[in-house]
Length: 310
Image (tube, rainbow, N blue to C red):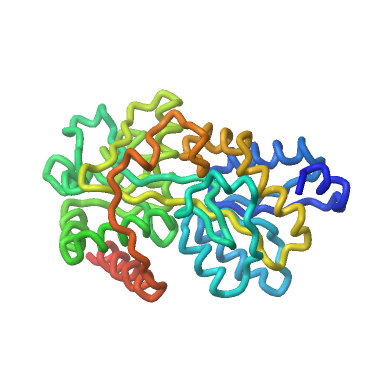
């Protein structure tokens, strides 16, 4: 299917995209698609939790055509619920098999790391446990995993790798004064301001953006390993413009679209598009065996209980 065919065969009704990704990237992808097709794209951008809440609230009258989430689990969950339209874009041929399925494909990939303020008078951390040391007493934030799907993926990766030792680490961090902030940006802000020294489990692309803007922070991928978070893109079965939705997915996975993804400091999903940042092949990764939704819920509840206890 070519974009010109879509332009000729579809109405001019706007395409609606819900995204938990960077708002600036969504706007650039929407503008690029509109320039090629003449089809306007309405974008709703929020955290994964807020996007999913809106989807659930609109079940009786679905609005979204395309969904881009920050957590792979979102896509697997919606597939099980029968909400997704099967589609494999021809442009997904260059996307590694781990990052696509018949129902969804990665738009791009982020990784989780430590973001450290180099002017904080603290030693540069090398691994997760360093943030539980006295030098970082009351100086560490972490995103709320109930608001950040990628943050929850990190907890699960650490749990898969270390079991009860991971919970000992989380307990030590809490004892050392680590606070659970809101979404990713709220966890990073006090580190940028110098009120805190480091973020445990920061989404890398947000920090790289700040580095580009001149902030004195450093993105550190821990020596014991981290997790990557492919950001799944999918078409809702309830879409009223499925052909336009397919063409939008094609555009995002085109070389032009993937360069926009790279410009937003995400790793491109395609392995033939480069980026000015480390790619997933260069990172040591924690094991990410499949964890069912009940286990995810239990891990989330256990972490929340730990960090809301006095």
